[in-house]
Length: 193
Image 1 (cartoon, helix red, strand yellow):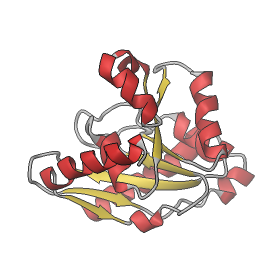
Image 2 (cartoon, helix red, strand yellow):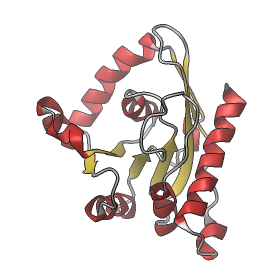
Image 3 (cartoon, one colour):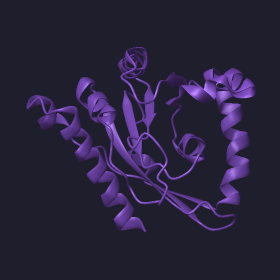
């Protein structure tokens, strides 16, 4: 058993009953090939929740600051997470993320870049659109519908992959591509509230 599988099992045992997690649409995540999961961001627990509800291993970009926390700096790389500098164009992180997709893995992203203070969906950053356009990944929208309250149901909804054939052919901008992603997440939230 890999460290990732072990951690996923332990975290599932704790979080699934605690938040009565209800997963909808996990079959929308392709069983193989590159996948970009784009989710809204309402809580620090979102990455582990996406990690335990996805049938495949998810690699996350995480803010660089948490890689300086003693225990986390040892654990995060074993969970396939890698650092990104916020507030600037981090070329190294962009290259690493594209490599993850090129190798046929799953990359998990929170396009808002930070947690929503209100729980409402915020503005998406261009990164999600950049990865959607620059890779052949299936782009799967995800909605986490809270709140994170003990023993109150939490929904994790995976939508059907967004068809990026046209935007890729038309060479849309990263911003326009991100808008497509955010609209899909918003739709999932509204349909499943």
